[in-house]
Image (cartoon, rainbow, N blue to C red; front, side, top):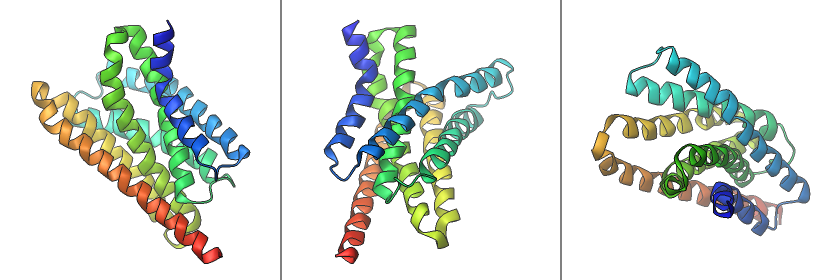
Length: 222
């Protein structure tokens, strides 16, 4: 039971460890991170209902359409909407790095509940593969989405462009991930490994860019 709880909460523990170590985060921002994490967790229910209904009615059967519409569009679209409502409109979002933290909070809230449900259905032995693949992928989607949400907040001239990137890029990444899983059978790892490496390189690049933007902003204030 203890192992089950630790495995299910591992994404959340990683997130809050990261946030705690960021001394620039205020107490108010910590509460907002927790709130957004919970919202991400609660998103599992409506998304699952929509996906189940569309699957049972056999409205979507083609792997490509299923990957990009059923998973990419619906999951990342609703995440974007929640991040826009609860983070973009909030005064605690001051820079792209803040957006990244909020985006990861939302994605890992979702992933934590998914992991829990998956373990209940399939057992503890399947936790590690889910931690290495879907959970880390969700984190990267959150990083990309949060980065552009953060940039949109304070770049009014490019606000619509950045908000569009925040929505569309995670949808494309998520759809690509699921399409590889669905349509390449036993050979999926030949594509999945380089794809995951690419995802993490993208995440590192966005975090570095966010840090650089933050440093430039501080130097202008000094």
